[in-house]
Image (cartoon, rainbow, N blue to C red; front, top):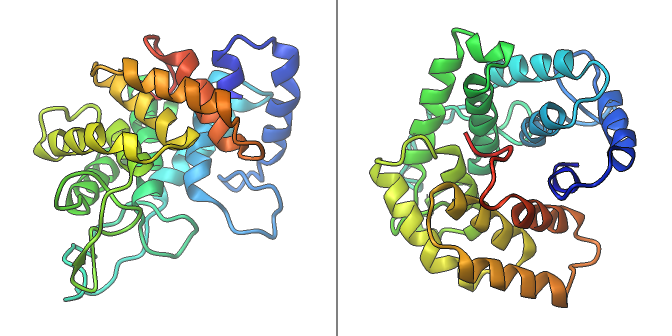
Length: 260
């Protein structure tokens, strides 16, 4: 929906999808396709952007409930471990409830709440939002890989440094775009600009393009690489990757959902 909207698709192509997404609201504060399934916390945060930019019936109420749930949601803590040099007491967001915090869900939660605060959503005035944002920022700083950038979950496991991955690094930098002077951001940008040519996929290239555009970094070669990649492969079946790529190519140089 975000990708087609950014590309100028007519409302008739988007309204049925918006209505379906609204039907996933269970009035419990989360969106879920089937009430028997676990709630995907990270992609509830992504759905916030979708509903705010392509409103569905009752979208404002749904967005407010999801944002309030994000503020209240916290990943589980764990005791200190000599195998992972990180602060396990920090609570960001998990993929599903009652599990440990991961980098990618924390990025989505952080970006959704920052966007709500920046763009005046009702939940953005919740007094608890400041402490959630601050702790999530500390978690991302604490989980940064030694050379810069981010892995999916931890920076060190079994006393071994893990390498950063392009899509997670780009997403973390989008979540930290209002902290441009921070060392962790500078190291992350340097890592992304070095690594993006090594991970060629629609998702990795699309998120990298969105990220470098937000930070006003040169991205001409990335646009060329992404256009060439989707022109050759289209990554049939990977609709998420295709949507990320289309959204990035349609949004570069413009205000968009992930730009604070």
